[in-house]
Amino acid sequence: MSITLPKRAAALLGIGLMTMWPALYNGFPLYFSDSAMYINGYPVAAAYPLWYALMARALGRFSLWLPLIVSSILTIFVVWCLLTRWFHLRVTSTLMVMTTTLVLTRLPWVNSLLMPDIYSGLSCAAVLALVGHFDFKPMSICLLAVIFAGLLFQTASLGVISLMLALSIIMSFAWKSVHSAISIVLASAIVICFSSNLIRFNKLSPNPAGGAIFFSKLVYSGVAQQYLAQNCKHTHFAMCDYLPDLIPMQGESGQPFLWKAIRNGASVSALTRGWNDPSGEYERLVVDITLQHPLEVVRTALVDTFVLLLARGETLISYTSAPAEFPFDGLYASYREKFEKAKQQQSALLPQHAVNVVAQLTTLGSALLLTIFAVAGIQRDIILLTLGTWIANATVHATLVGAYPRYQDKVNWLLPLILLSTIAERQTARRGIRMKARDSHSRATSVS
Image 1 (cartoon, rainbow, N blue to C red):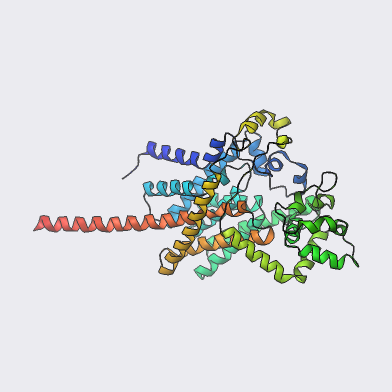
Image 2: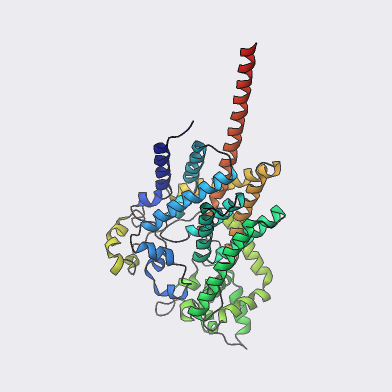
């Protein structure tokens, strides 16, 4: 059954609204603890790479809904490219696969966040689309641009895309033009990230705050406290003065090292200038602690990777106490009333738990079925690339940051998307075989 152009446009509009239905239901873009930093330039943002908040701040100047609308358009574009380049589906089947994915996963929740995180997830999907088919036409160039944006807006994507590229090369047993194109984009993003941070922070680093973020993970596991207790006696680090404050942070959730106020309303990382680490102390500590406790670092990375792969999902809280005053003073003052009336701020985002349960079952079930399909040789290339992307994203974020579901929610939706597309393609092929058999039977009957 074919779909007329008006119906196709209506379907795409409906899918576009579905990509951000949680925000529409909430009455305001979903808000996270870091959202203010991205849209308003909170002081901590001065220690982040310039590119992190660029898209969110630029689009937010016109409307705080615009980042979500742009993400919605990009989501539809990238997913459409991914499906059409790997699968032979009718338009109807493609639309049904996209709609079902939006219903069963947390993609709309990630897309509804007032954050730029969506671009790093879409960059992974764009890589998969390019590997399916690459040329130098506008569609491929736009996919490369999405990858470039994802690399700039979240530096962890540098590691994820690198692993995806390596996996694609290994699976194809050859170096292809698509690998050259992605490599150029990857190298360009690396050069821009490193050089801009060198100019801004006098540090040749992809993320000046990376040392403090990794150190926070070591504090959570307790090895940072062990190291400082052993070495502060003969080597003085700025961190040594705060060892009594670090000890109770072992096993405490919420990254207290980065965010918990201990003195004059500031955290340990802020008091020790960890966000830009001008002396390089954090980087040295991270290297030394990793070399001294390699097994514990590997153990926590594996445990956190496993936790992320369980796909438990993020639960957004309300911000009712002094509701994020810095974004809603001045430029964004007109949004304060809508922000405060949003369901999230009234603790009324009731579907969250149910959505998390459904998404977890969908993700884990899809991973199992995709593994079975790959073993059976059904769409093995795209399935292995998808599973590899899923694991690579979890491993990189678990190793560098920790088991925070928001990072993995960005790619979990790829599993059911590819699974549903594989099933739909096989159903289409079977239907075609039955129709051919019916036509052959009809011709034979008419001749006789």
